[in-house]
Image (cartoon, rainbow, N blue to C red; front, side, top):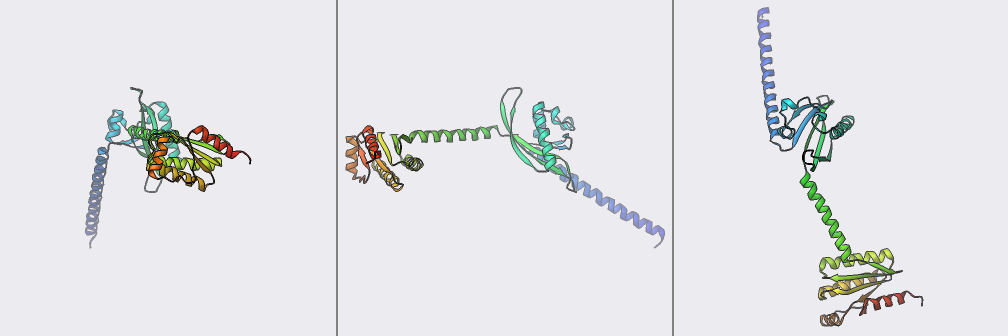
Length: 287
C-alpha cells in the first residue's frame, strides 16, 4: 500500500470516527432534551446550581414561581431571588451539604411577603458529582406542603383532643393514701369500657392502691355490657392486689343487675359515693 493510500485510509477512519462522535453527541443531546422536557412536566420546582450557588438550570415550575425565564434566572443566586434571611439559610444549608456530601430533606416555614400568609415548603437537596465523583454543584426539588402540614397538624390536634377527652371521661382521682376514685358519667360502650379498665389498672399499680372506687351515679344506662365491664374491672383489679367498691347503685340500677342475673362477686357495693369513701377509709385504718 502506497503512502497516498495510507493517508486516504487514515482520513476515511478519521471521518468515520468523527461521524460516530457526532451521532453519539446527537443522541446524548436528544436524551438530554427529553430529560429536561420531562422535568418541565413535573409540578414541583427543580433546580441545579454551581458551587457558588448560581443557578445553572431550573424547570418550568420554578421559573413560574419566581416569574422569570430561564435566560433571566441563569447565573442568579438565592440572594437575588428571595428575602435575605431565607437566602442566608439556603447558603448555610448548601455549605453543609458541600462539606458533608450528603443529601438532606427538610420542611421550611415561609412567609409570603405580598399576603403575609405562612406556607410550608418541603425541600430535598443532593450534591451533583462529575465522572470522578467530585462535587461540582447542588441539585434539588421543593414544593408547597402547606395543606399536608395543616392536615398533619389537625390530625395531631385531634389525637390530643381525643386523649384529653379520654382522660376526662375516665379520670382516676386519689382521695387518700392507697384509695382512688373513678367517677363514670354518660354512656359506657366497648371502647370506653376498655379505657376504664386500662386507666384503672395503670392507676392502681402506679399508686399502689388498695381500694378503687367505681362510682356509676352518672352512668345513663346499665345493661349487660356495662355490668360485664364492671365485673371484668373488679377481677382485673383483684389480680393486682386491690379491691373494687361500686357506688352509685340506685334502686333502678339494682333491679337491672338482678334482672340480668349479674354476679358481682367480690365487688363491694354502696348506694352513694360518700358511703363508699367511708368504707374505703375504714379499710385503711389499722386493725
